[in-house]
Amino acid sequence: MKFGALEYFWFFLAIPVLVGFYFYAFRKKRKALERFAHIEMLKKLVGRISKRRQSLKAFLMILAVFFAVITLTRPQYGTKMELMKRKGIDVVIAVDVSLSMYAEDIKPNRLERAKHEIASFIDKLRGDRVGLVAFAGEAFLQCPLTLDYSAAKIFLEVLGPGLIGTPGTAIGSAIEKGLSAFDPTERKYRVLVLLTDGEDHSGKAEKWADEAAKQGVTIYTVGIGSVSGVPIPIKDNVGNISYKKDRRGNVVSTKLDELTLQKIALTTNGKYFHAAPGRFQLEEVVEEINQMEKREMEGERFTQFEDRFQYPLAVTIFLVIIEMLISDRRKVKKKWTGRFS
Image 1: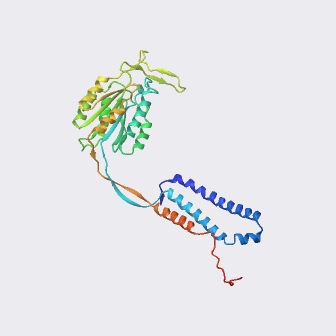
Image 2 (image 1 turned 135 degrees about the horizontal axis):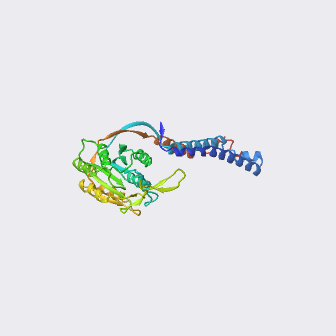
Image 3 (image 1 turned 60 degrees about the horizontal axis):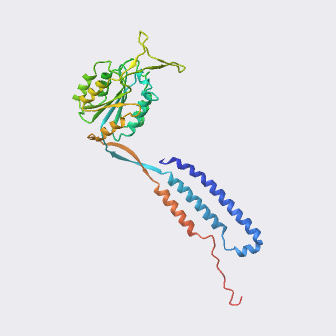
C-alpha cells in the first residue's frame, strides 16, 4: 500500500486535539450543571440524558475524522498495467561550453543564461525525447535521449567550461556527436538544436551539416553573443577578473560566425536565431518544433497504483450518519400506577 498525498498526514494531529476538546467540553458542562442545581434536582432534570450515549457519539465523530484524513491521503493498493502512447520527436541540444561562454555581454554570462533558457525549453516539450551534447574543442554526449526531463536538467546543470579539456569550438564535432545520439533506423522526426558563441575551429561544420541533411535531421542554430566580438574573461581563485591574451599579449576576442550557422541551418531546412541580451529566442525554436509533424511513439507499459480512497470515505459518511441518528437521551419506560396516582 502507498499513499498519493502524504502531506495530509499532518491532519492526524487534529485527532488528539479533538479528543482533548471533548474531555474539556464534557467536564465544563458537568461543572456548569453542578453550579446550576443540587445533584438530586439534576437527576430529575437531566435524568434521561445518557452519558454513555454522549461518549459513543463523541467516539464516532473522532473515528469519522480519522477516516476522513485517511481519505485525504489517497490510499492506493493494488496495481494495474497501462499502455501509454505518445506523439513526439527526438531533440538533441548541443551546447558550447568553451571558455568564451563566460563572456558577460549576456548576463550573468552566456553559459548560465543558455542553461536557464534550455531548462525552460525542456519544460515546454510534450512527449518529445531530449538529449544533450556538450562541446568545445571536441564533443561529448552528456545525456542520451530520454523522456525523463528532470534527469536531463540535472545533466544540464553540471555543464561548464571545465567539462571538456580541449579548447576551441568544434561545431563539426558537435553535429557529428549529435547525429550519433539518434536512432539510425529513423529518417524523420529528428531535430538538433545547436547553441554556440564562436567560430568553427574544426573546419568540418558544413560537411557534417550535409550529412545531417542526408539523414533527415533538421538543425536549428542559435548564435550567442556579439558579432563584433568581446573579450574572454578569466577568473582566478579569489574572484579577480583578467582577460585571455594571445602569445603576443593581445586581448583575445570571441566573435560569432553567423554565416556558418546560417549555412548549417539552411542546408538542413532549419532556421538560424541570434540570441541577444534582451531576447534569447529559444521559444521560437519550441514553436518551430511544435509545428513539425510528429510520429506516434511505441506504447510503453507502466505500473499504475489504483486509488482506494472510496472505502475510507464510505466509512466516514457511515459514521457521521450513525452519529446523527443516535440520540443522547435514553428511552424511559413509565409504569402504570393508576389514574390518580
